[in-house]
Image 1: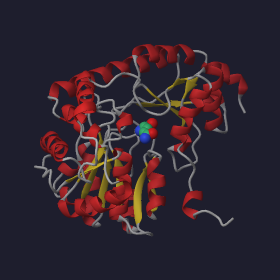
Image 2 (image 1 turned 30 degrees about the vertical axis):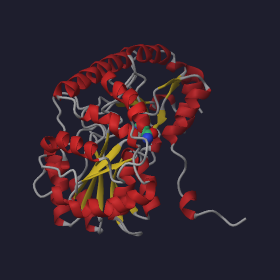
Image 3 (image 1 turned 45 degrees about the vertical axis):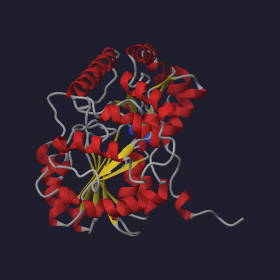
Length: 389
Ligand code: GLN
C-alpha cells in the first residue's frame, strides 16, 4: 500500500486526550484533560430542553446564527474595546480548536513562519503542521514563565508572519501583563505580523491579575485574530462552540476556511447558548469565585502534601515538579500515577519544545468532592519514589 500523507506522520495523537483514555482504563480520578465534572448553568440547560422541540435542527448560516453573533458581539464589545459588528466581524466555529486551525490557515501559506511560546497548548504544534506553517519556538522561562524580548525580536526578524498567544496560558497559568502584551504588540507592528490569540480562559483570571485583550491595545484590532470559546466559560466543553473575532477582511477569508472545514457550529446548541451569552456580569463574578475556591482547595492540598507546584494566575492548570522521582519519561510517570496512585495527569513534555521531563500537569476544574478524592490519592504519590525508572 502507498504511504499515507507525510502530514499525518509528523505528529502523534493528542497526549492530553490520550491521558483521558488512560485514566478511564485504570479508573483514575481524571485531572488530565481540562473539563469540568459539574453541570453547566441551569438556565442554559432549560434553553437546551426548549430547543429540543422548538428547534432549530437544521444548518445555521455557515458563519454563525445571527442571534448568537449579536449576543456575542454585545458581550465582547465593551471587554475588547471595539464595537464588534456581528455581521462582518464574527465566525462561530466548532470550538476554539477549529477557530485556531481556521485562523492559522487563514493567515499562513505553507512555509510561512509562526512564533509559538513554549510551553504551549499541544494543538498549536499540530495546527502549524496541518496548515504547513513552520513554528519558531520562543521559551517562556520558569518559574515566572517570562520571555526575553530580544529572543522574541529575533524570531520576528526571521520573518514570522504570525504569533500564537495563549492568554491566560495553558499549561503555565501565566497571565500576560499589559507591559508584556505591549512588547509583543509593538514587535507585531514593527515586523508587520498577525497575532492569533487563544483566550478561552479569559474569565478565569485570579485577583490581583486581570485579563487584557490583545485586540484592545492601540493599533492591534487590525492585526489580531481573537479566538475563544464558550467551553470553559459556561462549562460546556462537549458543545463545541467557539469563535473568531477579527476585522472584516480577515473574517471574510476565515469564513471561507470555516465553511469548507465544518460548514458550521451545531445550530441547536448555538441557540441554547445565547442564554449564556446574555448573562450579566454577576455570572462571570460567580464563575471566578468558584474557580478561586477550587484553586485554594487544590493548592492548599498540594502544599500539605509537600508537592512542589506552580501557582496559576489564570486558567485551571497546575504544573507539579516531579524531578525528585527521577523518571526519565514523564509519560511513564503519568501512566504509573494513573495505575498505581489513581490520578490522571498530562506529562509536561507534551507542552514543551525543549527537552523537559520535570513536570506533570493537573487541573482543578472539578467538584470539591473530586478534588478531595484526588488529593487523598495523591498522598500516596511518594510511593512512586521507590519505583524510579
Ligand atoms: N484545553 C483542554 C486541556 O488543555 C483540552 C481541550 C481539548 O481536549 N480540546 O486539557
